[in-house]
Amino acid sequence: MTDEAPEAAADAPEAPAEPAPLGVERTATGHAGVDGLLERLAAVDHLTADGHVEVYEDVHRGLRDALTALDAPPVPGPYENRS
Picture (tube, one colour):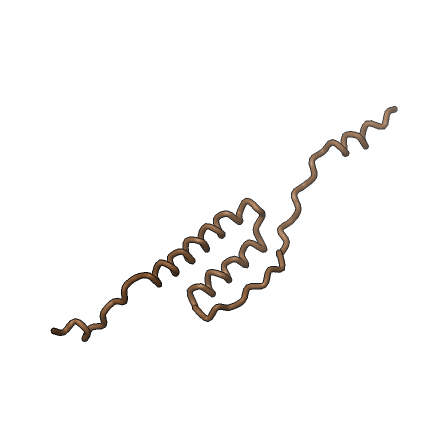
């Protein structure tokens, strides 16, 4: 009888670790849209690493849109177009 079983177990790949919270605190900004996007980042605490990309891209797109909106000219109100 040989002891091949311990060697075979040593060659087996390790199972991936379970998702674990990163413990990163998110501070509210006071802007509801931005705060909602920052809270969306909490979703990655429960996803495996390959699921992070979708969340990060979604949050990045939302933050970019929020910044772009700051550069947009104000829309006139209903009574501001009178001549």
